[in-house]
Length: 394
Image (cartoon, rainbow, N blue to C red; front, side, top):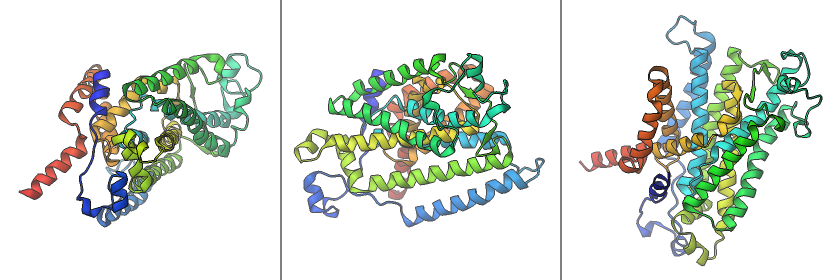
């Protein structure tokens, strides 16, 4: 673990540009160059993709007959939605790792907290349709509870649940980040602390008395916003909402990276001490990116739970957080598009392996764990960029 963390942390993705192309003040302050938000061709491709998904998915899921080759099954919708949620989480991690140089091995906690926040609402939506016909969630009736804990107050309202999706990860991330960053904990030590944090939270949520369903977590959801959660229409809306969130998250992350804020954050990664001597406060910038990343991860978790139908403490497993780092490394950290590619590639391979070679998946994952830092230091995107550059020179 330590060698993997050190190897990956030391690989900084930077693109040299002629000094003449940079503002004199920015050069003097040591800020990295300002990247373009998106090229005209990229904008056109993004708009075309949005139109194709926005029109094609509803037609394939709701209009095309089940016997048609163009029909999008419930399984395909769920798998696609799940992969996009993973891509959002990977994008969130890339903001702190790829651009700020903070390798977090605890982002699975923020993902799970967002899932639990929306899961509380979904459990309240079940109402008296549960196994015991009570207004309380079934697991509370089974444990002989007679009223909801205070922290469940208001969770019957979707607006309150959505607020919790944002606030809970944000508060935890800010408090954790404030004390660790102020203490100047960094590198492998910070990674280990984040891993310990998510492991401690997992153990806490496994306990029945915490009021989060214990080992089983939340499941057996019936409705969301009054609509049947398993109906084709609801699945389609959730799929499109997840896709829209992924696109907006990518554009927002790209805007942050292209701004002066993003360039200062990158400078924190490349030389935090130098930045302090130039009059900047790295703490504020690190806190902002860290908290924003946690919120984005929480939103990904909130979109994930209604589509897969379950959330339990296993989502907080340190192994899940390590997998997120692998997605980013495989795709190419510090690129934004790379983590999205990596999330789809690794989890697509996982779906294939677990379907046909379930016993070999962990070996394959371990192989990725070892080989990516050695053979693909810049990930898939870096490999493609290198190949394109060679093609242009030829």
